[in-house]
Length: 255
Image 1 (cartoon, rainbow, N blue to C red):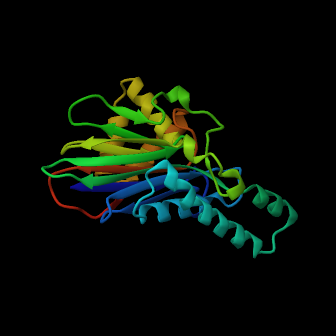
Image 2 (image 1 turned 90 degrees about the horizontal axis):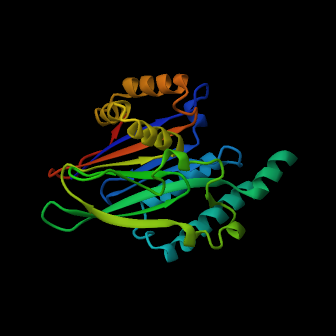
């Protein structure tokens, strides 16, 4: 019922192991998410990966009141990890401030006769794009390419900084039918995608097609060309494409 394609691409000039975006999917639980670790913070790559791995395998974690009970123990785990290591003074200073990440996750719930209910949470500038088979395309929590800034609200690893963050998480929901498509996108590719759609450019559709087809070479080629043109900022890219169909659950396709 949900066909999954996922793509993770590091910044130009870096190794895949240096990518600070993260993806996790749980087809059995119908849960999918992306996170974007803040480059300036310490160990944000690990924080982003811990967030997506844990959320995708959780049973709840949709309501705002549940979020504090989710990320506090994860932040404490990160602090214990850093505290057990011998770090140079400059790394200790960074670690004392903690890691940060944007996050977006969606869960589908089967509700009978070819319809799915979905619930999504998002914090920062990671976005969910919903393209219904019929109707208008929507984007949350940002729907304008001009809305992406350099200081988004992020999930902090430091438990002392987490107070009140849950109340600022965007929680939204809807229904999905066969033929609908959802995209979970981190900031740079979300901004580029929304701008391409605003320009009525075919580039957004081309990108969706190569991701949906599982054509990594074509996807990387398109990303490289858009970076070179200046239309796409040179940042990590995480994409999860979700296509709703009448067929049963299908394995995720890596692009």
